[in-house]
Image (cartoon, rainbow, N blue to C red; front, side, top):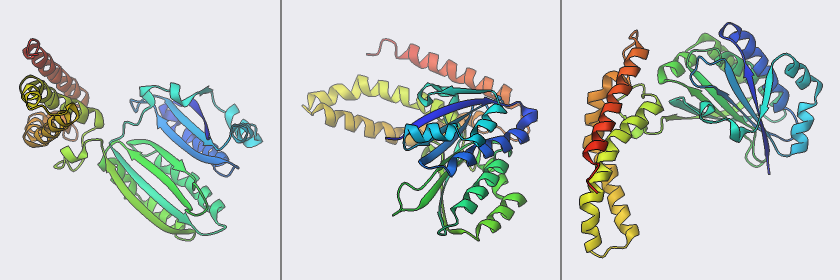
Length: 304
């Protein structure tokens, strides 16, 4: 059973470059150690917060402790104010908030893992300084029969991710990696409800998607409870089948026509144009949704 330990580190905006180097060095100190499984970087939300959480996972507690007691690790720890925490206690502020995640799988040439890990240190150091970077997850191969190194690279928007991919520094690093990486596979994940926002070239943030889904889903569920459920009950259907039918109808109604209508009405809030006053727009949008929620709750108050 693996063992994880989290570290919360604070770094001001003017220390971003310096902190990126320190963070990359700390991660590199762990990746080559016996028992290393993975590391996850979770900047605190919102993105302007000076805090970042790093979660290290090893095969055993003894290996985790041994890494912490390494001279290199102790030297790095001494350079920063660090708070040790259990990953389960980090709370929602350190959950993944990025809308776009690229899953990158690498297979490395035999006996060149050291070069690869040094390269990972440098590319993580550079990408963490780009706008919109929302952290990274890096995992070593789970077993020798499947020697895949996996990276989950997160950015706030697709545009932010494309800026990183189009940068000269990344192109230079990728050309260097051709010397020791045998294969690269990429898969993109865009938000929790990407299928309900197909027209967006840059999907809205996940929290906006979630709030809009709630707006259209709540009245559908309430109407089903009031009118559909009693009918299904009179048919003598098993409750499992009744719930399945209700859920199937709900999902279809959300996908069409409710979600397209809601998106059309709230597009100004979902994806504000570049250069707009995003804080004001977000505040007005939240106020608008709160009014809708209140009206819906009031309308359905005595329905059931």
